[in-house]
Image (cartoon, rainbow, N blue to C red; front, top):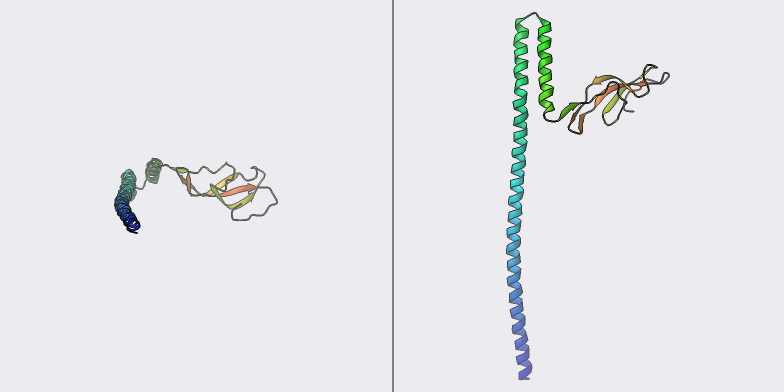
Length: 175
């Protein structure tokens, strides 16, 4: 009986030691997990801060590029108030518009080419179908409002009039 008790006591002692060892491992894993979570949260905050800084720098770069456009418009307004020469004023505004497109172009901004092209629902929105024999069907014959892209993404589709066969109705909306 004593031998059995000693054996059970020895077994209990071993189980307690194993439990103690497992508890220590568990605490170590919990500490590691806590550090990893803290590191991950710090990393997320750094990435978010960097993203905000990059966005701010992009805005700043665009604004600096557009300052020349603002200067040109202010000059055109001042000149327009002081002169009767409308042609010079128009040329100044056209030059300023070119500067605007150039500044936006540096950011990946482009016009969608429409007139003379075949209608593409990803780039164009039909506002009118015009019966004609002069153009092939679905060819864009007039741009009502310009469309624009930013890099490869359409940010505003062109509103267009397209050619249709004679005898079809003048319906509005997308084709």
